[in-house]
Length: 195
Figure 1 (spheres, rainbow, N blue to C red):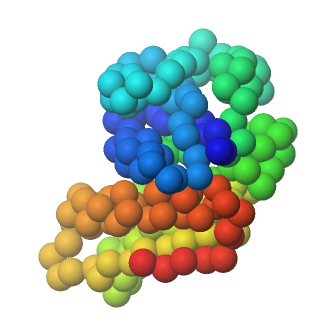
Figure 2: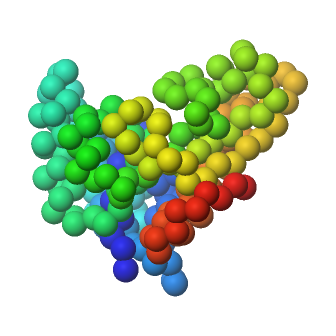
Figure 3: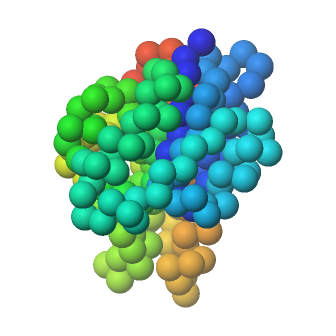
């Protein structure tokens, strides 16, 4: 049984879907949900799902990302995760942190990578006149939103779409894609899937 830790920064809707999926014959179980924001709504949601939680506020560390990560590693390593899932974790991780979990850290990103790494993905897709938008689950590498893609899901960009309306449709796909990829990844399957 693989042990999964999940990092969040906000409400944690993708985290909830991951946790809810890890039951029955699933090859993994959640062992920790951690956040860089002690007020993140997802922490209470994780606790309600009986998953241990931890919060390490990044603010006192200022620009010192390595010091923040050292503090974050304490509860993380204590949980002994086999897999680390980033689910709306809004901190850029240092290469040293990424390398510690190399080949074991997944992220979900709200675009059809390699298009639109970083923020404001839906507005950028609309501004570019793209016919499709979507989400990607990828292995995390030191370069932002750049690792090997394990799965993607796409939706058409509708006439009159706003960043918010498109984001809502993409989020529904994220909630299906991330659990599907994690289930496969937990048994060593890394062939890409498309929803």
